[in-house]
View 1 (tube, helix red, strand yellow):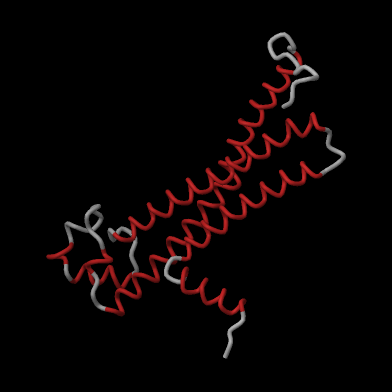
View 2 (cartoon, rainbow, N blue to C red):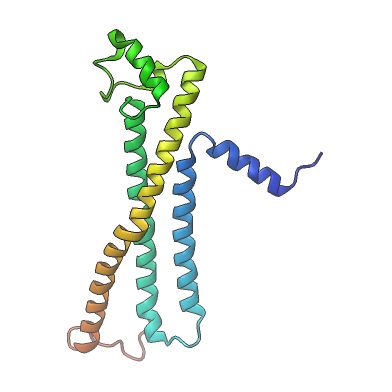
Length: 191
């Protein structure tokens, strides 16, 4: 039976992200920011109501905003994801079944839990226990990444973007008000 493109796409998404859902949040979030910024830039370019002078100001600002959006989103979510995954793999954050296992084997693991070189991915051999751990790790990492993405999108990115935009706007106004420092291009010069 010939599978539809949609079905193949769903299977690919499931296979790619079922063990690490946080990766999907990061990829789709960054892609969303990038496409949104490109759409805003395209809207400025094709809008006949926006003068060339305004386009020369708005277009670089939109592209810089997009760069800041993507960079801060990726930076914050990737750092949060790695940190939470490390907390899980060292046993600092673990499901109760894994905690019970570690407590039952205190002589082997008590002084190692929480250390950077301790890794539950390598320690757990029981399939049921490892499955519980992996599901828990995926859930905790996904929720942490989601929280980090909310922080990035709604707090950090607007702060950075507003500071950058105000600096760019201040420079632009200074350039317009001081023709001796920033002379206007001559009519024969192409920009």
